[in-house]
Length: 205
Image 1 (cartoon, one colour):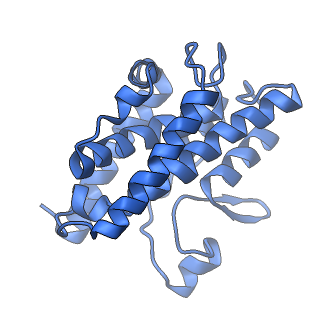
Image 2 (spheres, helix red, strand yellow):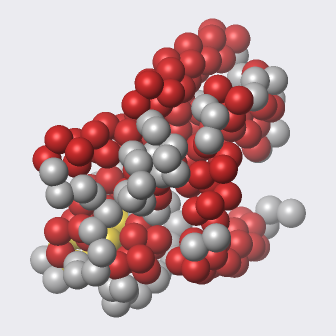
């Protein structure tokens, strides 16, 4: 999401691949030891949503927030619905869905399903998919949706046998539309290369 924003803005940046960890060096750059984080002239910034706002505030190029304060808040609302009520709960089932670590405990699955159902309901009420989440103009909400909804959909299918995309008419069409953007293609190509390097680094087949 961060790289996509930088490319769409036409910003100059250096892409440095680093793995998560709890070393003092890592924590000095990202206090939770997570990626992505952004190095600026004044120091480091972490958390994707915060970085996106920083990019918007500091880089020229097209804006991916509406000018109207209410409409801007609506876009941020869509971001939060996607992050908090689809992506984060789905992550609790990643072990079963993607890493072969065995079944997710039933009580965890019940909690995840409940939160995701509410998240889908919120998006169904607030997102318009006309053609983008918030209307005719692409926004940061679409950047977040592109890289979180497909993963949540996979978790829903594998863990719950639940067709999440059927709950949000227009969601798959939006994802496919976004994939046609040159910037998205560049990010995806880099991601595939990064995944191979990650697997090689940790000896994952």
